Length: 403
Image 1 (cartoon, rainbow, N blue to C red):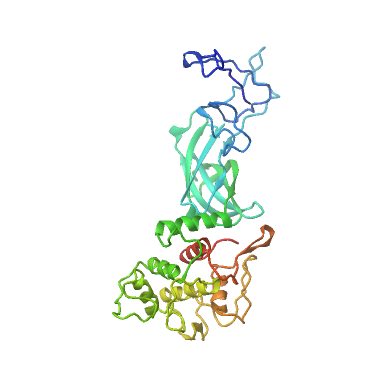
Image 2 (spheres, rainbow, N blue to C red; image 1 turned 135 degrees about the vertical axis):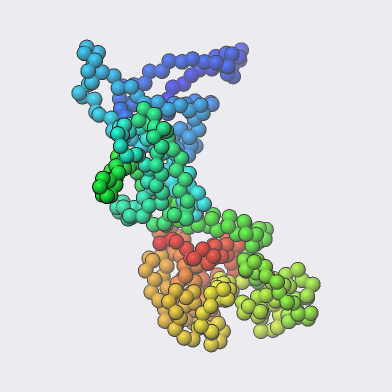
C-alpha cells in the first residue's frame, strides 16, 4: 500500500517541500490489505515512488522506517474475538533473500512476529541447506538464539551473519524460526519449526568471476591494465602467488633476450629453478609473447606440482606412474567426472593434453553451460586477465564449486 502526500511549501511556481518542514496526513488502507500476525513496516520515500526494479527489494529505499503489527479488533457488540478472523501464527519476513558462497559474509535481516510467549525453552534462527528438490540435506550454516529480552509483543528483529565459507554451491537454503524445548531426564531437546522462508543461492559463473577478480586484485598478482596476458604476466603472477621468495640469481642470464637488470628477472629465474618454464627452444624467454590457454594450464600444472609433491615425470612433465589418490596430478588413465558441466578433456593429439585433463579433473578450467552459451575454451591462442584470474582463484581455493 502506498499513499501520496502532496507538497505544501514554497508553491509560488511549484512546490519544493513542506511548510515548516512538517506534514501530517491521514491514510485509509483498504480492508484485507493487512494480514493478521504479519509484521509490517511504514516509511517515507523522499520523492516519487521508485521505478520497477530500482529497489533491491520492496521498500529498500524507504527512510524513517518503523515497524508495526496490525491490531486485531474484536466484535463491537460483546468485545469477543471474531470467529471468522484467522488465528495469528508466527510469521518470518526477510527483505533481501539472497546469499552468496563467494562472499566473505552474508548479512540477512530477519523479522519474526506472532511468537507465543514461552514458559520454558527459547526461540532461535537456523539456516539450513536444501537440495534441488527443496528437501533438507541436514547441513546447517548457522544457528542463532533469539535473546528473550529482544522479543517484544511476540516480535523480534535480528541480523544473521552467514559466512560464505559455510555454504555449499548447489541446491539452496532456508531460514527457520525454531522453538527449542529442553529435554527432561537426559532426553534430547525438542526442536519445532514454527516459521520458515526460502533463500536464493547465488552460485554461478558470474559470481565466481567477480570473486576471482576481487581476490586477484587483493593479492596484487596482475597488472590491472593488461587484458591479454603474456609469458611475463603469468610468470610474475605465479611468483607473487608463491610469496615472492628469495632467489639466488645468476650473474649471467640464461636467456638471450633477458638481461639481469630486467625488473622481473627474479621471477623468470624462480620459474626456471622450480621447473615451471625454461623458455623456448631457441634459448630465449620471450617475455612479451602471448600464452595460449593450454600453455597457461601447463604453467599452473607445474606450479601445483611444485607445491603438492607428486610422482616424478618421465619427460615433458607427463606423469609416468599411477598417481596416489587425492593427488593434484592426473593419472595415466582419464578419470570420469560426475559433475555434468565438467566433461573430461579427451583430445590426446594436442600439446599439453595431460595438463588440460588435469584442469578438468581439478575443476580449474573447462566448465560448460550450453544453455547459457558459456564454455571455457582450451583452443584459444590467448588468455585474458579475467580468464587467468578464474584459473588462479580456482587453483588456490581447491577448484571450482560449480556443479
